[in-house]
Length: 114
Length: 111
Image (tube, rainbow over all chains, first blue to last red; front, side, top):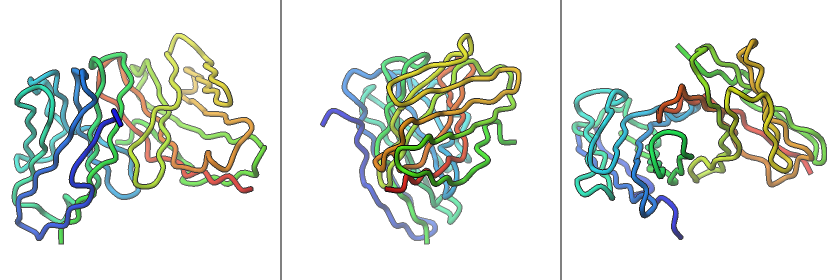
């Protein structure tokens, strides 16, 4: 299909391990977003890219979280030295432009940190 | 501080009847509101939206009502169908790309 895809769908990490989560946005979408959804909560904004530029990273919870989108297409969210509180579903979304356009979400990656 | 609140974690409705999902917000700067539907193991899917210059928007069986003075919006589904069973998220934004989501309401439509 032509939707947003994410991989892996599930990831189990031991505390202290580094993880990398991948997002393939819809082709041609300029804007890309990462959200974190904890159990029983709604998605919470992490960061926003317009093409390859990371314009907003105000939602990243700590400096252990890092996101990149080097060629303005695929994006990777990296979490270093994972902690148990990082356990959540990480959602990626893309849109044609950042403002005034619907965000299309991927299925998410469920991260469990043991 | 929860800027967007969905106070009902769950709702059960008989097939064919009306489902009403509620959402309250605190930030008067919000000017665009959205409803997303989420099935298990899938990402949220856009359902319907409304601008703050309107008080109603309708799309087929789905209607969203906005009461700015009460900082309240609601989603009406008529008639409800079993396939509507999902978690519904309300989201708001203040003219930016940043969506603020509520905690969701799980709707169960009983056949």
